[in-house]
Length: 365
Image (cartoon, rainbow, N blue to C red):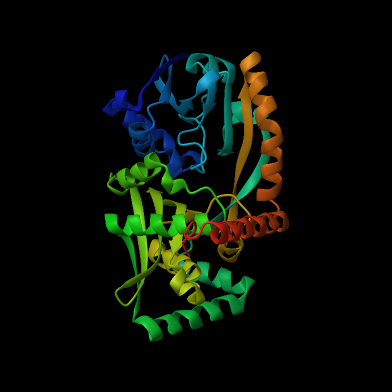
């Protein structure tokens, strides 16, 4: 096998066609592994590269990665994406150590490795569920599944939907709008949520905002940045920006206007998203790993993603392990245990509240 490393914008039309063909309908069909996403990240992250794997029959795989100091490697847009891996032709095997050498990496760390990456399996340290809204049977079947888990949950949501319409105007939903103002509104709502809950505000990072704006304008036959909006009358009350690839939608940034919080607009949005997505041919919505309660309300089944690292022997890899491993273990313990997640969430919110009192205006409600 030969491996060449290129910038995303150096990939030719035939490369992109092969990449899309390799994605197929399996785990690597995920929107975060689509070439359109990698190209968009490459425009705002100059350290992004793609390893192109070639055999005598031609190109057999694509491995997108970012290379940082000391040869530390990550998937594209680390910390933002919910699917990692190598997109390849069927039955292809590769040597992870050869791959890292060709990429100039001493370590490649992943936390959302998709299933089916056999050469990477021995490097997995943890496998965790990523909840999915399964729409393959249509919206009626999905709704029946949600009702079977909690009849009162859907009844309460419908009551709140009627109250929202009565108090603020007819409730409507739009899927697939290309409205830049709508995207900025969602980013602003999400920023306010990050600040209220004591999280780091991702949208203070210019390249992240630029990436989402670029993806909103990205449309191909198989891929699209997908914006949805829930309105009461003419007023947007909730929304979501995600990525669609074929019949799969990756949940990414859901947000809502806190002024309407008593109507549970975020939950209403997810329910109506399922209805409109199913009607538009979407078969599944990946909500991403994590112990957030709203995901349990809509979960149909789980994908499985893995966390771990591939390491080449050397001082850089040893230094990376010593710095990252204790933090990684603690973070995973919190993320994947609902009780610990809830406790950590309370602490962060309390800290954000204190900052607001000490520095007025530091957190917008």
